[in-house]
Every structure is written in structure tokens, then in C-alpha cells.
Image 1: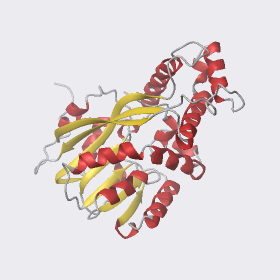
Image 2: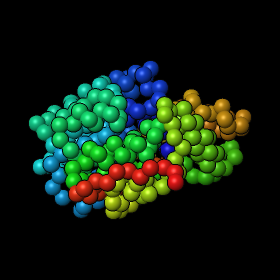
Image 3: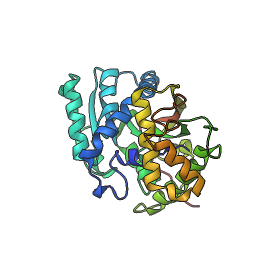
Image 4: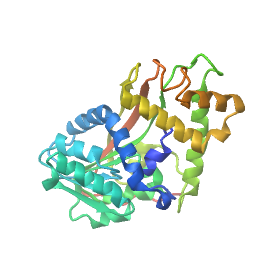
Length: 309
């Protein structure tokens, strides 16, 4: 499982359990910039999807954030109508503005509300429903998948981006502090993610066997593939800003779980005046892997399996 120190990024999809106190208008530029950085990976994922979903009429981006990926869908599938769905109206305003700039506003719509219930507002079933790191913000993921499946047209495809590998930004040994800092940060991220899941309304513990869960939702699992974002050192300004932002958010929220020496190392990395810090190092990179699972709704969708005997 990968969470990429991106708990704030995931809130950008509008499904975090305490998202109501977040200033989405202030966060939107950062969320948009981060999604733009990951665009090469998303483009490969969409090209892979296009081999299976050839001429969709309606594509739904469930948890769209500021609409970067929604607009990539509009570019990849010029004959499709795109609907971006999110819990944050400020982020959807950003999505509509992007669609206008890219000349696709005539076939681009938005729906604001909490998943999965807001999907009932769609006028038509989806030929492709894309849910990128959205499902794990729903307390009952099994019920969430069933709701996603119910909004698919017969033969429609659900594309679920969940899992992958933790992102890496620096070598294991950076020349000061104890080697392996990011691995220890990953462990704290995993603990945070587990607690985040447990605190969600209606939380149900569920093994993350995505192919089995898709099957239990009445879908036919078709393919799984992982997509790599490989931005090697020396990092571009945008990639470096992403790394600084990611580690700053980690320090602000989870760094108390590190020991004193690791916190000191992290502070040095984030100090703009330290020549060994992230702002000046030539060995900063971004390496991440995200996994996409696809499943198709049969012509007659069977009822999801019940738990238990």
C-alpha cells in the first residue's frame, strides 16, 4: 500500500472524515500543481484504459479534486462527456475553469456532494467511472464499490486507483542523520492511514483484496497494472516544490512520531538556508508507483455478496 505522505492531497478529493474545516480555495493551487506533476503517470494510465474502453459516452471522475485528471480524460476521449464529482465546490470551480481554458467546457460538467450518494444525481449511467484514491475515504469500502458498480452502464468499466508503492524523494543515505529516514516516515504514514480509516463514519474493516472486492460487487475484474512516475535527479523546480511541500506537511502533522535525531534531520532538510537541505540538493527526485484495477459490469449485474456464512 502506498500513501505517499499525501494525506492532505487525498483530502483534495473531498472525502476526508474532517474535511469541513479545510480552506479548499487556499489549498486548490497546491492540489492542482501536484496533480500536474503526476500528469505523465496519469496519461499512461489513461492510454492503458483506452485499450479497454474504446468509445465511452459518459466518463465520471469520482473524487475529481481540481479536475486535472478530468480534463485529461476529455483530451484522451474527445467523443465523451466528462462529469467531475467532488465534495468541494471551490475545487469544482477550478475544474470548470480548467475545462474552459482547454476548450472542452461544452462537454464538461460537475456535481458537488459526498460520495457515494451523490452519484445518484447523475442523469445517465457511466461508461467509465474513475475513482483515484477515493474509495479508501469511505467507511464501508465494500458498500462504496457496490454503489460505484450500480452507476455503471451494462458493459461499463470501473477503474479503481488504490495501492502502489510509497514515494521516494532522496537516497537512503543523504550524508547526515541516520540512513533510512523515509522508511521510518512510511511506517508513521501507515499508522496514520489505519487510524484515519478507523475514524471514518461507518468504518468497516476490510482486507484490501481489490480483485475480490470488485468481484463481490458484481463486477468482472479484468486487469491490474501499476504505473510509475519517475522524475530523476536533479529535480525540476516543480518536482522540488512537491517534495518540500510533502515533507513539510509530514513535519507539521506526524513528525512527533519520529525520534529526536530524525526530527533534526527533517528540519535540516526543510531549512531553506541549509546547503544540505531540499532547496539546494542535487540528488532530489520523485519516484512513485500507483496501481489501477479495472472491472466491467456485466449485462445483468448480480447483487453483491453478503458477508458471513
